[in-house]
Image (cartoon, rainbow, N blue to C red; front, side, top):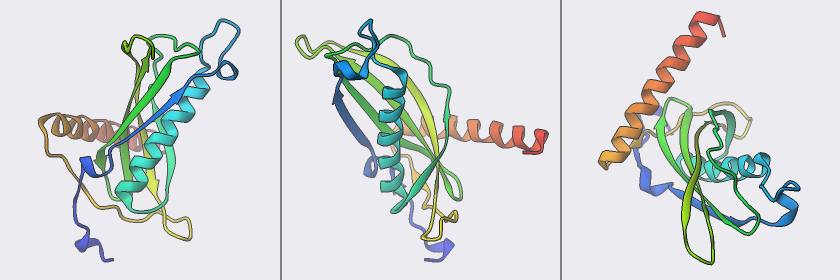
Length: 163
């Protein structure tokens, strides 16, 4: 497909949610789930959103600023929600929001959010063009603009450091 025929794709078309019940083998001796367990879930849900949008394989390039706001405990249901915020030429930024639910009460709390950047690859493992993202709602448009600003800062930083 030539570059000029890439049709923009809606954010809603690739939005993904994954849920997982936190079990004892996922936690430390205090009953708090290991951060690596949550990072694995974040990477997987973000990858599904990226692959859906790109229509093919994508590889993780970076995970930006993961702050664990609250511990997640054994027995809680963790939900990770991912959506494509921005698409460059070959890269995609996916925003992920993680929530923990006390299954008995239904009470949910936001435990962390982060941004995961992917690059779409072809069959030879080389970067390939990706269709632009089409933000439709006010929230999607805000996320798009914020992601675009983050990308500009990253690009500026790379130029300044020679990376």
